[in-house]
Image 1 (cartoon, rainbow, N blue to C red):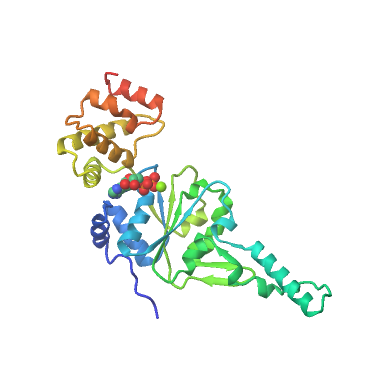
Image 2: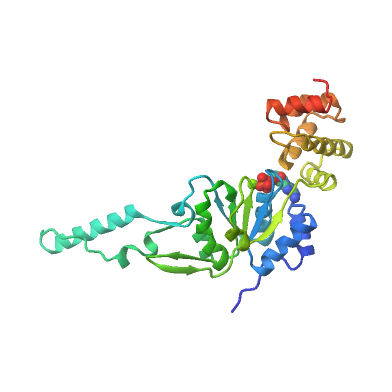
Length: 300
Ligand SMILES: Nc1ncnc2c1ncn2[C@@H]1O[C@H](COP(=O)(O)OP(=O)(O)O)[C@@H](O)[C@H]1O
Ligand SMILES: [Mg+2]
């Protein structure tokens, strides 16, 4: 019997429930999140650092009561870290124990530990990694495959079976199919193009920095003590900084940090001096700070 779909009942439902947990989604994001659940399709979210890609997956897990299983991608990530690995040490010990037991039974004559493959390639000797873990879970699960663009292209090959068939094939054991399909979110900072094969299997969402209005809502919802006036000034300044050609544009997380800083310093007016004094909270490269001071004509 098919399990009831535990995700969102409509795009509006996604907006409301995500907002209730602190994630303010724009209409495109909410619609795509709804569709990913309703169609049981993996969702690929692409965009610059700090626009809420990872947080979207976490928020979906939070509001749906699902557990989050996370595969953090990095250069050199391989099958043994992404899918599963055989516990060789345990297999070896088991073979030795079996040999010792036979030797004792044979009155001391040596014997090979002739365990058959089917005795040491069983679940007991399997170390499951995030992709297999998510596939095997019986409770609602959000599978976050974070920063896919950081892996080597070959790793995308490992993902395909999971993304298209929600299953993992283990040569010694057979195919493990999902009992309940996880809600899959892949994120990418677009440092390289992902393969067409991966893209074809996913719904696609491009996330950008939010508009001023939404960013103000995000900031004030996380830092309620921030005065409206300062919030407006902060969001406007962040927007100007993002328009400059910086090494690293300020992310939403940095807007929020900045808001906390201004509250802590009891700054009631974000004037040039206040901006200059606190610039290190939002810009983390000396060259970016110099550029901002020059272009925004701040007095250093
Ligand atoms: N739509 C949003 N609503 C509320 N907070 C957000 C939103 N988008 C981003 N954030 C905040 O920005 C931070 C950075 O987002 P994150 O998901 O880590 O960025 P990335 O896109 O690099 O994965 C989050 O911890 C969260 O606090
Ligand atoms: Mg992220």
